[in-house]
Length: 569
Ligand code: ARG
Image (cartoon, rainbow, N blue to C red; front, side, top):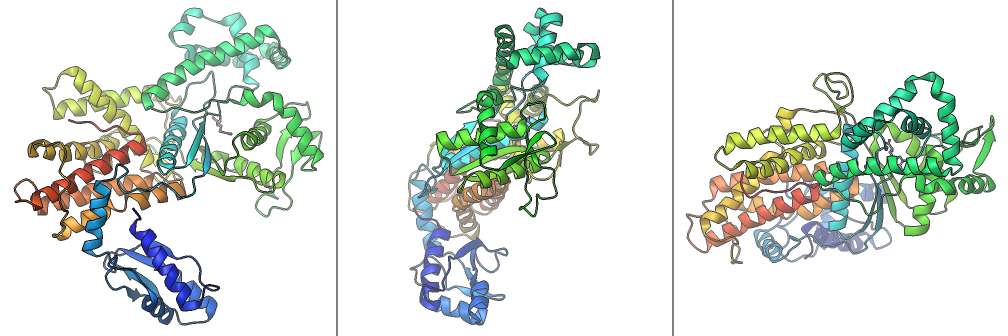
């Protein structure tokens, strides 16, 4: 089934060709009307085209309208402003689309005609350190983007680019050999590894020994290699617990160490191609030809002492991914502080390959405490992700208990898990990711507002209508949309596909949370104005069908955010 914007775009493009000739016409840009007063969708771009052709934009818009041919999709279009063409969908078109969506498992969302191969590099914590709230954003945003792109039909490859190589291993190995506490290691592996690292780091007299251990590791010493592997395994076990709680998985976990054997060759290749050159003993990629980057320091790929760097690994990773997976796009999800790094890596890639994949840095801001400073625990240390999730579930349990005190504890706990984890995810995904946001338990667990508990509760409420109706699913009745609130809800349901495309286009999950929040608002208006169970047939069935579609869209929408629905609350 084609969505309204697709049908409109097609019709406007044809009309443009008739109006100005195929050689002048460009693609049509269909957007939701900023003000619903003017209609549901508007075609932009006529203004720019008129300017280019030296014509009057309003006159050109009228000419395009005269050429427009579509059956009953829209009421007669109108022109506003300096040449916007506005469309209002007809009730009969909306009715047909709703009926089609009801019969469609994918709720009217077609898969893309040209699937792309997209690599998503996300989560990527550093071993021997606890995952902190900064990694929560990468994990949650990356997982959501993967889900949405997959649902749209793209071939998605998720890769956890673990920080499992680097100078910290010299200190960790010394710590492991001399100061390790096996009991502590068993109880809290990452906590103990962190202690060992800090201990060695704090004792300057151990520095030289740590360096020597690092060199041994880099030269392939068997004992050190084994310790290094153990440290990774222990860290991974802890990370896996968190991933399981979050319902996140990866196709690959290829850490930095995987690329280690390739670094030397990558540096040689970059030198050979004259992309890298020596400066003060170090190997660097300069960006003199790049207006934005020419004033920044170059991308360092080898230090004077021969050591490789973060950037070297990223160049090798890129080559490996391109050679192995031939991706159309690679998306990196990290915090905003790495912007310069990725700009440089991407600019270097454009020098290296004639046609590199579309490289995108999906960055995000910092999570702030209520004091406006980066979120910390009371003693000033970064908040650990596992503790945060524990607290979310505890707090959710009291919310659930308040709502439903008689439910057995195990059931309340199960619900609290979905609500608590869902609340943390939703709070994160509903932000414009590029800005910082203030972390607030009371806001994210509020039963009112743009929150996970509110959305999950909305789902429960809609489901309870079916329970009362005595059927779990409405029959496919003839849909009839008479009341304005009914039509408004139906049109919003039909905007699910374009919303998902917008999420994919801008890498912005908050388009989806905003859409779902509006959906519940429109559902409430519908439910207040249009009796469902008390109506006579066929209205009753038709309205039940709208309820069912609303529930299905909420469920699918939350699923794409990585959030579970619950059947009671
Ligand atoms: N491990 C890094 C960190 O915690 C993130 C890695 C992101 N991915 C990449 N290809 N550089 O900051």
